[in-house]
Length: 166
View 1 (cartoon, rainbow, N blue to C red):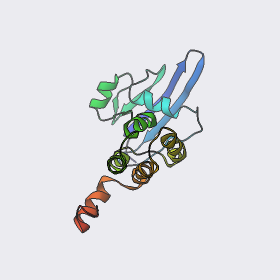
View 2 (tube, helix red, strand yellow; view 1 turned 180 degrees about the vertical axis):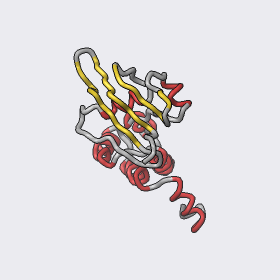
View 3 (cartoon, rainbow, N blue to C red; view 1 turned 90 degrees about the horizontal axis):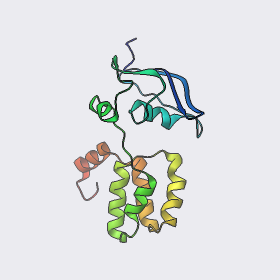
View 4 (cartoon, rainbow, N blue to C red; view 1 turned 90 degrees about the vertical axis):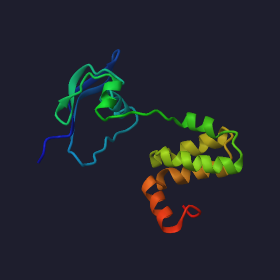
């Protein structure tokens, strides 16, 4: 078994008197897929923010391909290959609200392709889009394209059927 590609050891993070992360350790092998799961408030986002340098941890170490990146600022973490983006449902709603039906459908589908989200987010997104005035058809264009369409599928559809179908 090879050494871990991304590894965390004894990570701790506190916000005042609240412990967000306590002695968290993980190891992901090169080419593997691993997940961080837990209920709301378990510290998943805090751990990701620590890994990407957005939050400064109180204790522990993080290694990428054997190199210690524990206290790198976000721009330095990005330079070594770990990137964090912020595209919230609120921002998506603001972009899609007020668009006409035709342009909105196309824009929503394109936005859905580049904005993957967890399937458990579908109901809150749907409710948020509808209550903020995004037309129902535009909402469905976004919701259907986000988890189902990716760049590889688009290239395959184009190669097989042309742009009209893709």
